[in-house]
Length: 631
Image (tube, rainbow, N blue to C red):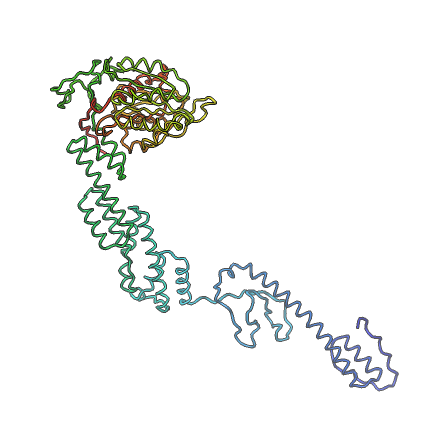
């Protein structure tokens, strides 16, 4: 009840006194008991009332106890999450109830309070609680071993798994045996085999010498043990060893040894990729051997063929192109000490080479020659040779260029109409005529005249000289794109690499390329006759980039721009280089044709190129002259 009952009336004097029943020590119940006794109620009714009140009080006490228990559990759970030792405790450990009289539950919290004098579970009063931490039991050695094996199986590396497998082996367990069944070690061995095969396959796919040697070293110490205990096979190791033998044979240049290794690989290996790699290496070694033999025999024709073979088979380009420095081109039209060439069927040149030409100038000629005199004055006089320039780009002043070519005895015709250079008298005489095409920014020049393009290709194959001049943008609205369209139409039909892009010459075109410089490679050829007397050359202010494929197609590198890109390339008019066809010049700086006085070396360089493309197979021949260079 919310309010206590009224006090019972006081007993009358002299009445019989009766001791109150000792039913409950609680004040509320004591008052009820006295009231009932004072009114003279029956004892049974009083006891029933007392029992009813006790039940209600017990129910209230039980409800509050449950709430307090829930709050304590919630607080213990929050505290448990913050304990560092809980986060690192083994997940498999679950404490259990030890006996029925224990004060702990079946799954006690990690921290809980206890009373030092008594415990609430046995109904005794006690002092204030204090808190104690319950530690997990230490894992056994068996559990530790299983955990280590599980870690290896889930994500262990090859070396980690191998370390576990060796430590758990029978010959390593004398002092600290592993209390683990053999079935667990079988899983570890399979894991090792899988990882080892994966490593061997990756090394084979990379085809890298260092990776192959590393994979072989890692596998040799494991394959025998895994093969004897688990009957595992590793054919990848045999392929790696064969590939390493191939690479070592390539380094030594031993063609016979490489052929034996390749034959054995074909018989024993099912790896077609390995066989293909061996065949490629054999092709490279054979091409390099042919190049070395040509240099040793001093055979220019064989050297040209070996160079072409090396370029197609992927031999080091530095070695291949460097071998061409041993080739000397000679011509009766080269001036020597300022004089013109002359024929002498029985002469011997100054280099000791027997031939029909006595007045010569070679790539590697020693001595001093008059500056800016590659060709003699009027060297083509009365021979009827002519050069025809077709300008499909912007208007250019080519008067200086024309005058320098005419001084060599050449007729020079400059036109902007395609039909002017397609005259039958020009195309029918390829040995006397040379055609230069200055590309425009739009392909309407040659792309709409494919019949004339094919005639130009046939003209060159018949022995006529051909020059293809491209350029970057020229700064006008009509020429806002690189002037390469017509050049690429011709190059595609000839089967050569295309030109592309535009970039400004360094320092607004005032940058001067140097043949000899202290740092970095030379941008000018040090061996070609067109640049022999030129040590400095202004590259021009608007350039385009030539394809490096031209060098693989038999062209000689003459000039590289300040950016390192190929700027000028030439296919020689000799029989070995052109095979009877005419010379081909591909140039990426059309502004050099202006022969500006401010452009250092441009006038002489463009003059030499123009006259050089008028030479034919019968006018030049090549001799071998060792430079002593090693590559």
